[in-house]
Length: 268
Length: 326
Image: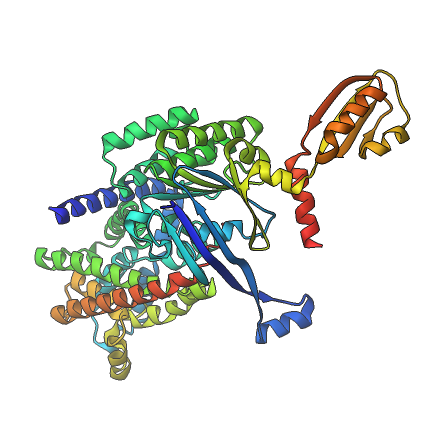
């Protein structure tokens, strides 16, 4: 009974946070549109690959590439993470202190604010995709139901893994105050090893093998291929997401426990 | 058992120092010079259930650092703290549900949304039902004279309204221990008075224990029977405000209005002359000589009016702290 009450209470907290954060994101609707536009890189890469006419060199058909990059665009829109910047700002400006004084881990506030942002982004992404398909009807494809369901689960897990990765590095703020520089450092492996600028299948085998032991391919390439209907190791992908998620969660917990002892409650 | 108990509490900080100019900047890039600062040094005190205690001292004396340790935000370097039966650094759920910290203008309200949205989140976080949350919101709003303001975005509220809404958010879960750091900072006199009245009402109604820091002595004199004066991380005084005044100001201020001007030198034997304007004189007379000197003054001079007061507490504490730093 106690567990059920706790569960109901947690659902109420999540619901209240989601409603409030959604209302807050709606206040920033212009910013959300700009952020959505800034996520157009996969569609730009699609244009570059097709114009360069090199897809055949790597054994990709135009249709294969188009589906991959359109899917990558969708995945990128719903795996955007900025927790390092928010956490650093809250730490420096003293907003983290009131969060720490409430009986809820600050993690959930940031996690739910990202989910709320994704909800506000959803109609914008739909408009982008519909417009793209209206302009280029040959790009239209309908993924099957089973794959779509798997894709939605994979997308949520991919976002969670990326969020946990950034959350872990946010803990640097407890020692150094500035963590956002690490976000820029993470951008480079993310761009290349996730399959955002080029499908991983186009990489030399050694680099591809290296990429597969990092979390990046599972953050973008894996869910994109699921949606695009391309060959992909489904079980391996989900297992990797689960292992990375668990490892990052554990590391975050350890670093949080150590870091909080160093918290200096600045700006207050 | 005391509601708050602090023993040998010490907090050291390592701060980085940099010499100005290019040379200093380059040196700072390669090697950081760090210095240990003792912010709070072996502090001891107890606060009983339902007490309102003023925590005063100059900037950097260690007030806020102590409050942050008491609510578990920062870890002490050494010593022990017990608040409502809990060790704050463990940040247990039950402990966090019993305390609150209000830090001047530091927001727990969401800037772009009305306070009601933040209050709804707080209600869920503290496990209040909708009915209970609405009841408490109405009650706090009525105590603080807030109603329609709760539906306006926080950024559109005046400073006073924002502070009241901030108090509502901090007290919605009805904490039994309140740590208030400059709760009236920047408020106009009417808002200051309203906040003081509110805190007094809250204390009477719920028996809350309050530790309050403020640079406005009005907050302290109107709310706190007991004060802790902290100076350079040490407790300088722990007792009543009257005791503090007597300890710091062994003299009383006597203001005399005469029917006709009398030369200044005539008053020198009675005490230190603070102000002389012919027929208006302010004297500082030692408490031990007060009765005798007042009687002589009334005998010798054509006194129209006479007033005996304590020197303003701000002035007294200011003098003490200035003396302590030089």
